[in-house]
Amino acid sequence: MEKVSALKVRNHLGEILDCLEKTGAPILISRGRKVRAVLITPEQFQRRFLDLQADEERQKLIERIKSLRKQKKDGAESTAVLRQLRGYES
Image 1 (cartoon, one colour):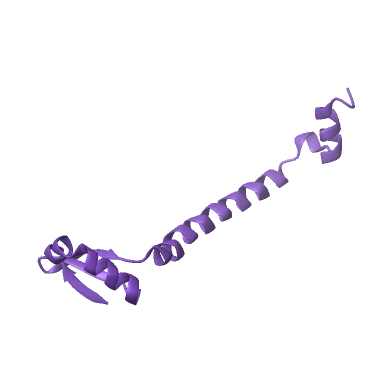
Image 2 (cartoon, one colour; image 1 turned 120 degrees about the vertical axis):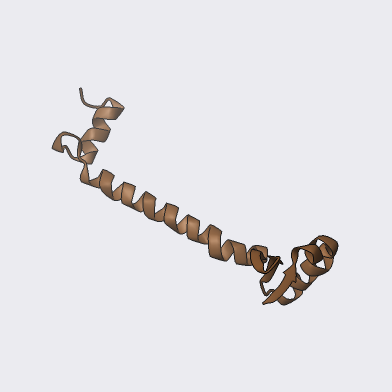
């Protein structure tokens, strides 16, 4: 991992982005003596954050589906409920 100052990023952003694209290694951006940010590639962002978020949303949806399966309307079978909703039975 390379560490660069915020001033260098401001003055040489194009070079730093080329380096990031070439090596793929995250670049730490410091201001003073503290690391304030990290530059990563879009692929790394996708893999680390967006895929994780999608997995969390998928888990919530699965839990919601499972909870809905447990709830039966008046103890009736699903086909009977569908027939009633469609107007086949009164």
